[in-house]
Image 1 (spheres, one colour):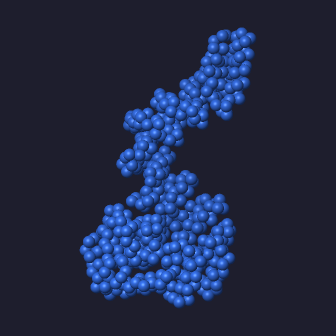
Image 2 (cartoon, helix red, strand yellow):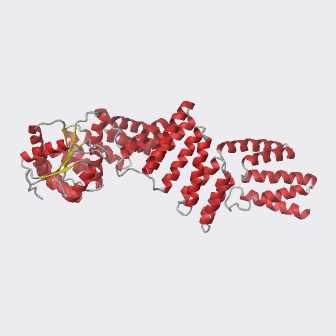
Image 3 (cartoon, helix red, strand yellow):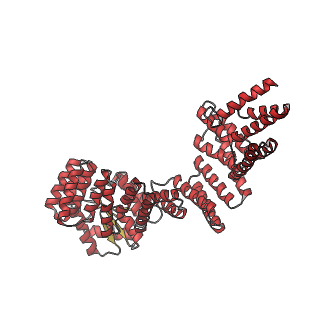
Length: 543
């Protein structure tokens, strides 16, 4: 398809939050004969216009005030297909910081225009954009239609007839061949190019081919060669991290991603990957920093979701629980702030409101603010009871666990009873609830119960069953539903009954065994429970 438009007939969109700047660029376009010029003062207005009017050239400022910036706008419109390859996107910016520049580069606008610019500069650049459209129009159209055969044919045509665009056409050609899994053909093109002179992009594409073949060891030295020649090649760092991950070298992968974020921090997916790896390796400071960037980068974009808030808040609380007193205070307060921001952002979303309050409970507990924590727990209970039928089982289980975690047995039991009624026909959920109630404890209670149980076992092995019973009983005070502890009590009473035949031991055995009738068939203590039940019935019959 031939390009049959001129500067006069093209459609333009000028996006800038300052009306006087829009007016100035519109005036320049008018002096050059442009008749179809549209204006947008922010990203939302730009999206509305582009939805209805396919524009040939978009001249967009990087900073657009409140809402999305130019980088975020371009990323979204490219992703949803609103902006085609046949639309020339020009990023206008006065920004000189490396972070902003590299972030903009990664969205691949067709050109940049630095502020301030004179009329002659603008005229020259506009002619260049129109000429690019004319030279590449058949290729860009084929790319819009995703017709690989037409793309490859157009690449050869461009490389032959328009030398200034030859390198770009070869990049498109190689990328298309790799996408078709024609790896040998792509490699042949690259080898021919590299035989003439070294080119970073060509070496990088050779590495990508090796990765497609799962030859990660062969890909790594190629990526390292690219980075030696060009330390700012962020995609090489990303792919190097992928190679390391596929070889099980997670710490090396994290280092590669950290290098990438130092070069270009304004990439959301890269920061998510870094946060996940750092958290996995207990590097909570790095994880928190990454998740903070994610939250910032996702704001006002299609990537914005509660999960980003939750990951950051959970990481901050983990930092607080493991840090010094000063670190605890700072991190837990930050987690509180993140939880509140999330709840303000999603006021009508029930799971978000509940999760936010659960995060707040943990933060307040870390700070030793038990009264405030208990107040939040009561709000969680009231909200959960009002919406028992609305919550997914996973969220409901997390709520129930939290009550028991903070020794709120009554709240936990009441809520579990409500869940049991709500899911009366779901055997899997019923079993989960039984398991949850078998040991609904805080960490401190679990630890103390374990210590007392250990002492009880020592006395039991020594044949001092009275002392064993005493310590098992103390352990049960801290963990009243633990099946293992309950069965320890049964065994101790059994030994004492065999010695003195006192009926009170039989009564105690029966009482404790009845407490475990709920155990599901696949519970780890089920076999032991059944064996002791048989022995108890035999002793009872003998009596």
